[in-house]
Length: 314
Image (cartoon, rainbow, N blue to C red; front, side, top):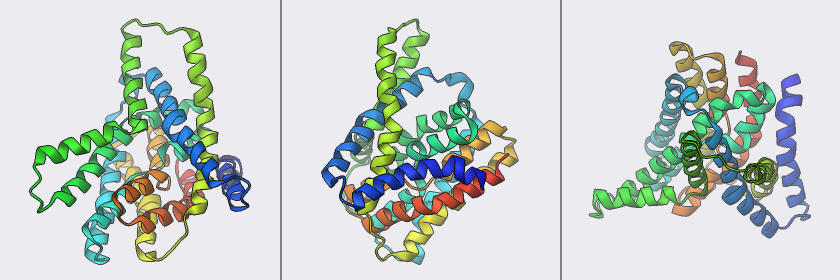
């Protein structure tokens, strides 16, 4: 009970406050959109830039943690995709979106504040390592899978599909922030010294990222109504909140993953799908109700699932 009250509840109270003021019309939809544009396109990318620039790349890239997390994520994707295709008989593009919803955890807006509150700021190194690959890898994979699905039978060349997928990934603000952070990391190790005023400015924007994004997330979730597709929604929630972290925990235990790596891997995997799952669905016009409802219901259910994983982890 203590973990629920002191670690999980404060984060979801910020989300709930955003939901409340949007529901009561004290914060307009245009204001929510503006806040989320600031958070997702600018503040969070700056936070990612800052974290990647200062990350000890050699020390924190632990293969056992990354293999556990990403293998679990891909198993979750293909479980969702296969269930949508063979059990629910969804259209091919719907299947990709449903799989992507099972794949893409809310690593930043929920994973970072909850892990930090549970285990302290020093526990975030593993989270940042996962996040460094998360958006570039999964956006490239998701866009590629969708483009190949759409191109099937159209005669489009393999190279053209791959180029479209890569260009789509490189235009994503979070990916840009991560890549710029990597570049700065290399420059710093090469001897570049940035003035303190630069890092002070970066810090000011970074500190605004999570509160603004969590509040805005509540406003966005208010728009998502749980409508229809209940079987697909339940399946997506189960893959995101139970299957993915369970695989990470199982593989991590088998390969002897250390305590810090296990905490970062399992907690990051146990987060509900983020708004990016809906944005992916909306961009392709497929399974939008499933993605939107899963984000809403999964975020609410994750209060209990995160509490469970915190109790299981060392």
